[in-house]
Image 1 (tube, rainbow, N blue to C red):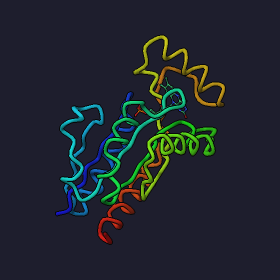
Image 2: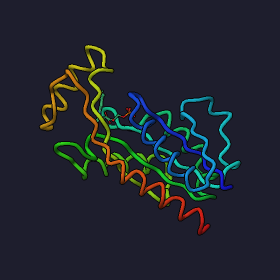
Image 3: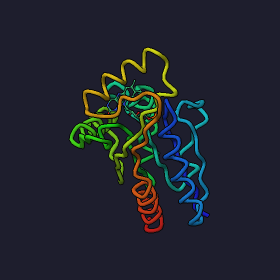
Image 4: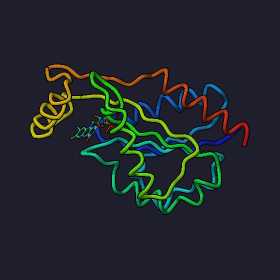
Length: 180
Ligand SMILES: Cc1cc2nc3c(=O)[nH]c(=O)nc-3n(C[C@H](O)[C@H](O)[C@H](O)COP(=O)(O)O)c2cc1C
């Protein structure tokens, strides 16, 4: 059974949900998947124990997490020696007023800074989870989301992820693994 490492960095949980959906899709098609938070003990991470690696992270204030850049720089050789993929989660990628060029810029910046050239890259729309934000983050998000023409009624959360696209991405990765 092919083994996949699915590393993810998520602050409010949407990237974790996306990673879970990918893991579910891959397990249904006969893969073994280890889902590991990217901020878990990095010394214990060994991509060489896997047939393929997927890494996913969300955008906050225009960046993927800095610790993930350091980790990817360190793991780059092992990543590129096997089928590997990256996905980015942001509001620019989707939602009421998507900004795909901005979503792509976040990805380009991350890949330029790490030197990583993943075989497969995707950008998924995330969520606005007012229910999880503290008072300061909620205010920041009302402004940020409002300026982008999004939903500012904080009495509920908003999810923009295209789950079919997430499942397609997992399927494409499985295909690459098969061909490797
Ligand atoms: C404080 C904060 C800052 C954010 N900054 C950006 C941003 O600069 N650009 C963007 O496209 N999305 C931004 N987002 C949206 C997040 O990428 C989106 O909510 C995503 O679903 C978060 O994923 P996570 O729950 O896995 O952390 C921001 C969200 C928060 C809460």
